[in-house]
Length: 205
Image 1 (cartoon, rainbow, N blue to C red):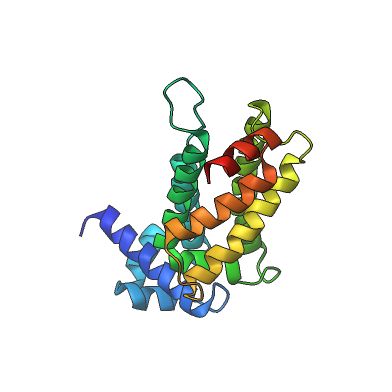
Image 2 (cartoon, rainbow, N blue to C red):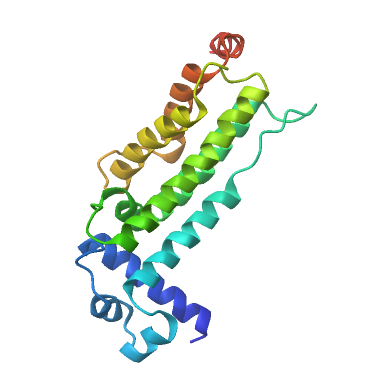
């Protein structure tokens, strides 16, 4: 098997193990067994479970960051609401595809492992920073209320979305990605957007 495929095999196995047992109770032996590889093979690629978990989070972060596109207000561009919706669908689709890792990120307790805690904080801080930049850009464009605190708004968006995605990953919410995105984007935009933009959106319904 090619090295990149072997690495992917072990990453997938680790994701399943972490989701089933939790990061703290999972062991390298569990991952090796799930992947069906020799112990020596595992250590050719990773130093331990912390390193394989860190790579899983890093890969997910890159996928999410790369899928987010800036809103284009140039003539002929799609309506900005549609662009925001498309961005959210891209992110939600990735998290839905990675439902096991989503469960690990959203549900496992902090305070038991310093490296684990740091990686989780890095992931959510990165997402919060990206959403905050989007809110600030919306304010500069005159689409988002200027009285909003961008950091508070970003934290609110991320916090409520986290809960929805976690429950979807666990199968507690039976919603399609599109339905979930429509509900959440309507909730966020009507609460955050400039009054003139909110009026336009309401008139379209």
